[in-house]
Amino acid sequence: MNESAFKVNNQANISAVTARLFGLILKLPLEERQKMLASLEARYGVARREHSRKDYFMTVQYVVNERLYDGFIRNISPSGIFIEAARQETRGIETDDPVILTFKHPEFSDHVKITGDVVRVNENGIGVNFHQLLTDFPATA
Image 1 (cartoon, helix red, strand yellow):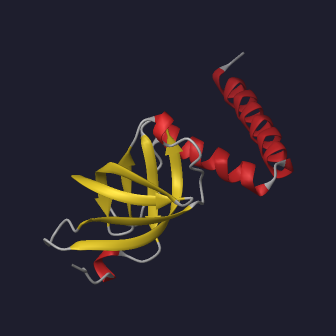
Image 2: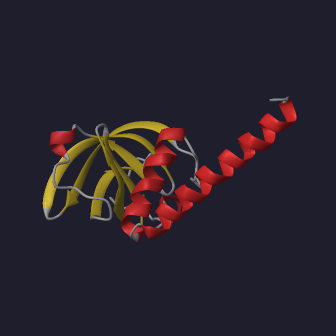
Image 3: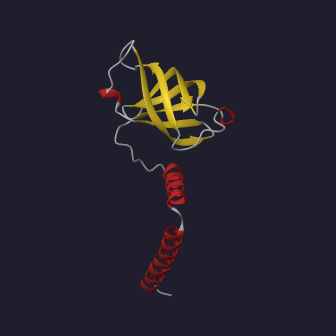
């Protein structure tokens, strides 16, 4: 097989595989599509963040499903945080669960109380997306 025939054949295989994947994805319920998308983005490091994160190590208290947790923030952005937690500590926490958080503001000495939703739960902890940007949030004592 010459090189140009190989390229044509390879393109046909790529198209066929892509079409089959697309067909299967369309049959999935929306929730399963969202989980698949999050998994693939995490696996391949696809950035979809509007705001960059910065490392920030600080204690945080948070409430999920009427249960109080103590944890450590690992990184922060104006739109969310990642809380380090072992898998057994996050048992019962699910994506889309509402969260209330209290922690020391990274740029001021004041504490903030802010709400958000869990957007990721994995073996390292939970990701939280704030309901409003932290930069827009007035610090409270």
